[in-house]
Each structure stands twice: as structure tokens, then as C-alpha cells.
Image 1 (cartoon, rainbow over the protein chains, first blue to last red):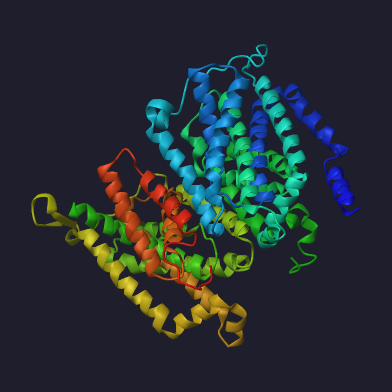
Image 2 (cartoon, rainbow over the protein chains, first blue to last red; image 1 turned 180 degrees about the vertical axis):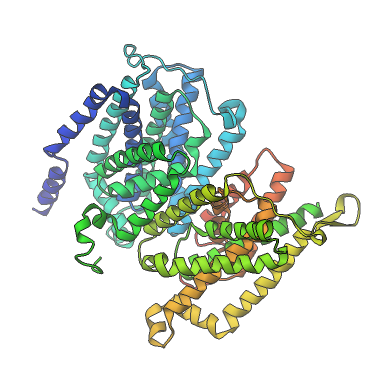
Length: 324
Length: 291
């Protein structure tokens, strides 16, 4: 009886809402309607995928990570190197990027098993920085500080060339995002996802009701790494370029911000956050190209001080002054 | 070889002063303050401005940098930090990253993005060499000065924390705010002064380190990692932990950069990860202390 009910509640959570197909149709139509913004749509899709990946570890499993760029960058370099030295097919390259990030994620997952939030922040940050140093020093392979240039992608599925306007790129990224979005949703609303949430909410309790906490974290972290790798690979493929920037600290910080803006533990949070963030970045850096990080910082500070919920519903700020 | 060891120690000592304030805010007050480097940068820029524009002598600049950064810290604690003590760590991280971004951009706006230089007084510029051959010990006077300042600071701090009334109040407030408040300790004042003091230390470190580490608007982001490493590796329950961690990292970094320059900053990060996996709460943690 209870099992049935649990089953039904999981089932209903994966059902399509009415607005969802609409959102995706708008997303897929946007490169066609607003063709000058195709590049931004592409960026938003990639960022959303990256944020989605972080959501799996941060929002669903409750593991803070300041080094998520490690997987993003690893996927980017893997895909770029593969395209440059082996074959230019995008889909195979994407698979290679994902595979590389998955292996790295599995290897790195034991670093987030122990310790406090601070320890995890530091270890994940350190891992990303090590990769940054590696990419910088192995300049015969990665091009060092100049970045890896000359990545030429073949046509998608042998048919669709990557055009200058970036429409193909946008549709490609959106499709990958869509696929991974539904895989993650299926996964997070499965019994497996429920155990992750149990670990997030109370690790000790999860452990005592028999959830294998360690191995669940390993699996969640590895899956997240694969998604981040996919996002990185998409970036490298659609821009034809991979540079040290993909490993930088601000990538990890930005994606965390995106996720928190959009809402953690809710798969659309990353997507929403990516849209808001990218549009804001585009808007602000058009006004003040050099100092836009100031406004980003201000936004963050206000966001945390006021609280995300109340920022989304400004009319509640004065109503219950100290309630939250 | 001894020269490298000495340089490593001086570098470690510098990191220690910079990280100490962070150890205080993070360890004692349990606040993950990634904006710590911004206070250090403030100290550095106060020194640069005072020396270049007002012609204040270097030695006088150091306490002024301390006071300036402490003042900024106090104001920010009162206005922005206090509501966040009880928020989750994630909020604190985001908030302090936001502050850092703002600090970096505003310094860039007001001071320009070029690196700033500090003119050391004549008597700090020399260099003394002892011994010969492989065992030569070359000591830059400025580094010697840093080591001395740091040693004095460590002793004073250790004394304040473990022997004075303020120290015991602080420790009481940290361990249990409610009980401490019930005993008549003004927890708010204790936290305010502690935070200001930590920021002041950062400012002093920034002023001292401007010559060695370089000072430009990206300072908080560039060195944030190092402070955090020191604190994470050293543990936050004592002063000796961060001190030893800072020395270890300073020596490892300088020696690594000298002997295997190809590896660069690699060694430090690797060392940190290994240590943190081995001992997640830090190397030197008081038994039974609060995690």
C-alpha cells in the first residue's frame, strides 16, 4: 500500500507539466526567430546543462563544490583534442568528452566523501586548480595560456554544417540539454534520487536506514561529472576553441551562483538561472564591459541578504520583516 | 639550500599573517569568508596610497593598514555579516564571493589594474649572507623583518587567546553563544571586535606582503586559495595549526618552484588534497573540539 503510494508520487513528479513543452518549443524556435541571438541561446543551453550538473550534486545530494569547472574543462579539452587529432565528428567528440569527464568524476568522487563543507570546498577547488595548472604547463598538448586553437568540427550527423550565425550550434546544444535534462529528471525522481535527497537532508539518518551513503555519493558525483563534461564538450565544439578559462575559478563560482539564483533541488532552477544570468551578463557587460563583475557581486550580496524567495516576490519584503 | 628554506619560512610566515584573520573568522566564528583577501588588498592599497600620496614612512603605514582594514571589517560586520552567521555555508560562500567581486571591480575602477609597488626604506633592502658553498644562508632583510613581525604577532595572539579575559570570552561565545550570553558576555561585541581584529590582521598582511606577493586588483582571487589552504590544512581550533600549515606550505611552494619549476603551484594543491583526504578536519585538530 505504502509502496504503491510512493511509486505513484514518484511517477507523478516525472509527468509533463502543461507549460513545459511550451518552454522547450520556445527555446527551439528562438534561434530561428531571433537569429542574431543564436549564439546567446547556445551559451545559455550550455550553461544550463552545466548548472543542471551541479544541481545533481549540490541541490539533490547536498555536496558543496567550488571546483565543478574541473569536469567542464576536462570535457572541453577532451572533445577539442579529439576533434583536432582524431576525427571531427561532433557526436563522437561529445561522447569522448563525456567519457573523459566520467572517468575523472569517478576518480575524484572519493575526495568528497569525508569532512565538512569547508574541506569539500577546498578539495574540489584544489582539484580544479590542479587541472588548470596541468593545462597551463602541458603546453605541447593544450596550447598552454594561448588556448587550444584550430579545432574544426565536421558537420553534425554528416549533414548539418556549423554555420556562422550559430543556429546549428544552438539547436545542437539545446538537443543535448533536452536529452540530459530528461535523463536527470527520470533519475532524480526514481528511488535512487529519493535516496540522494535523504542523504542531503540528513546523512546520519540516511545511513542508519540502510542507504549506502558512500556509493550513492560516488554515483551521483560521477553522473554530474559526465553532464558537466558534456557541457564543456559542447562549448569547445561550438566555439571551436578551448582555453584555460574553462578551468578558472570564476566558472565554478558562476555556475554556483546561477544555480542558487534559479533555485537548487529543482531541475528547472539551473535552466532558469542560466537564462537570467546570461541575459544579465550580456546586458551589464554591454554597459560597463570592464566592471560588470561589480554589479554581479552586488547582485549576489543582495540576493543572499534579502533571500531568494523574497527577491522573487518583492512584495513580501516588508510584510514579515523578521519572519525568514 | 638554506636560503630556500629561509625564503620558504618567510613566505610561510607571510601567509600565516594573512591567513590568521581568516582562521579566526572561519574557525572561531564558523563563517566561510571568501572575502578575506579583499581585506588584505585593502591593507595593501592603504599602504600604497599613504606612501605615494602622503609620504608616510613605511613603518607607520603598517599599523595604519591594520587599523584601516579593521575599521572596514567592523563596519561590514555590523551591517552585512551579522545576519549571515546562522545562514547555511552555501549562502556565506556566495555572499563573500559577491563581496570579493565588488572589491576587485571597485579597486580596478579607482586605482587602475596595473600592479602597485612599494618603496621599502633603505635599511630593509639589504641582504646578509652567512656561510659558503651549498650551505649558504642568504637572508633578505625584508624577509627577516617579516619573520620577526610574525613571530611577535604569534606570541601576542597566543597570549591573548589563552590567557586574557577577552580570550576566554571569545572561546566561550564560540562554543555556545546562548550560554555565553546568559553568563553576561556581550556576544555581539565579542564577535564584532574579533572580526575587526581578523580583518585588521589581513590588512597588515596585505601591507607587508605587497612587496613580496605583488599587489593588483586580482589579489583577493589570486591569494584566496592560499589562505584557504592554510586554514583548511591547519585546522582552525588553534593558532599553532595554521602556523605550522603555513610554514609547511610556504616551504613546499618555494622549494617546489625552485627545484621543479615545471610543476609550479601544482605541489601546493596536491599537498592540500592529500592532507585533506587523509585528515579531513585539518592536520592539527584539538581532540574533542567542535568540528
